[in-house]
Image (cartoon, rainbow, N blue to C red; front, top):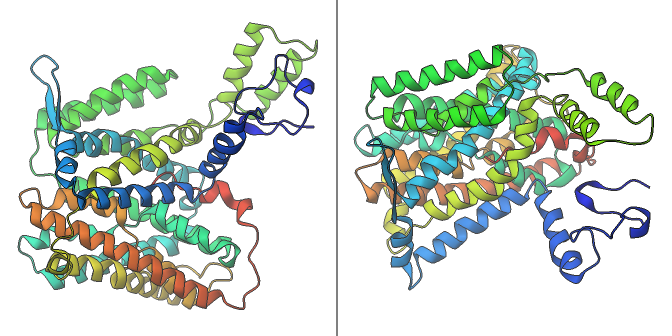
Length: 467
């Protein structure tokens, strides 16, 4: 009988283990009742969304509790690094936003690269509809926001309602189970990825205050060094990590938001395996012919097996838990803590209304309108078993901006904490309303429909990378 992944087994310990099972695979009470259930929960695609939601809720409770002052004091604790005169000193919140979130944006870059090389974005016909829909879902919300706020100081937040939170959107769709066809799920995922590309461009072009060209040139040079090393077949991860850290620091000093270093490195990561798959299989058969593996054979087999899988996929699998279960919850904890004392005034401010209007109304209108035009012009077709009512529901779910919207909100009003707080409240309210509206519309759209095929068959395609 096969041993299942992660060290658990359904067969007697003596049949598998020499000296008993690992703790996680044992029948000890904590392992059986706590550790294994937590592990299984973290393997579910909605787990990241749940943790993100809990972190946001904790932040709101903390910021509105009798200990509210400790929230600001903690996240504004200053931590500095001195690197021979080129050091940096930032608050803990900025370290989360500028450094830890690099992991999230790196995973996003890996996801985009995979989709461009091996996924749906490589096929123009398949990608056409979600690309056009994503463009509509970015332009219309920004236009609604500007129509409400005008082009003054509040208007600087026009990029906030353009974003879609992949983790939350896929998590909400996951709650509906097999009601939603896999083709509709894939449409939403592809749309969200294109949305991420748009958000990255917006951050890079419109939310960079000033440029230090010498540092930017160094960052570009380091990126080119990585490309050259790949061409030379230098295949050492620590080398790229070291260069990546310096690249991040260079971008930070240049004035461009440092998290874009993660996106850039993700986009140049190899999406083709170094070795052909049959190389590892052939070697394994040879090495196991004598029913024994010595240390040298084991080391070589590990290398061959690893390099039979593209680096993009390996890094996604390795970093997704860190992004979804550490970086994003900490980001929400550090940024979602807004005082609700003036909630009534804040939620009716132009900034908040613009964000709610953009995400709740602009997203579905932009996505459905752009999709309708694309279908009528023959640029694409609706996903299989997907109706226009279902498209409205998918568009509403895409209005869950949260992570990237909060991120852009922090960049939009550097001189006004009041506008930043209004924007954060608007993002939270809009994301909750968009989720509720999306679920309601999708339930109506799928009522009476037979269950779709098993989503597990497409789990590898749908699992979010932590956005």
